[in-house]
Image 1: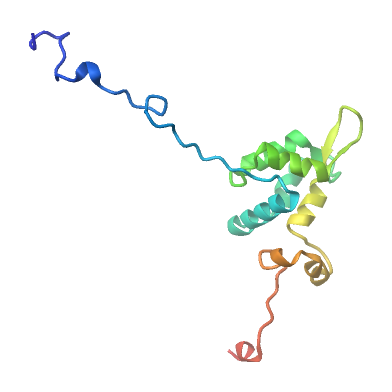
Image 2 (image 1 turned 45 degrees about the vertical axis):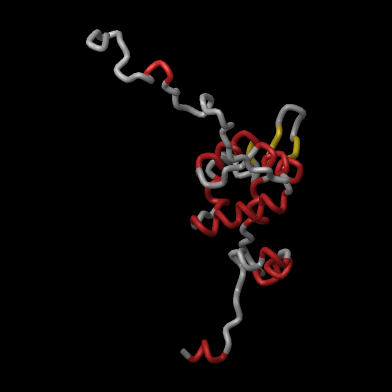
Length: 157
């Protein structure tokens, strides 16, 4: 009878579909990024994010380097990059960077050379024009070293 509290209110109450990704008849689409894990591609993405968010990566990673050695542990690097919440580095990205920037001071101590990584992402220091010329052609436009030549008309303005 419809007046009882335990009776269904609608005729389809026993057939109501629960909501959620696992209860649907269609599989849920999960956004996955199939990244090649190429070091140059990872550096390019980090460079772009640093440019967009105005991040000086060397200053941020230097906070984890207590002895000013230019290197930190790999776990410190991962935590520092995650703390910025804009890079979204996957395990494949970390492995790609590990292949180029990690060295061992002892069998148990794995260090990440953040100073070389930061120099590859955001070159700074003397002779910036020379460093800019050494950048790959496709990343010159996003590099902080990219300098556009001004024409005579633009200089007169």
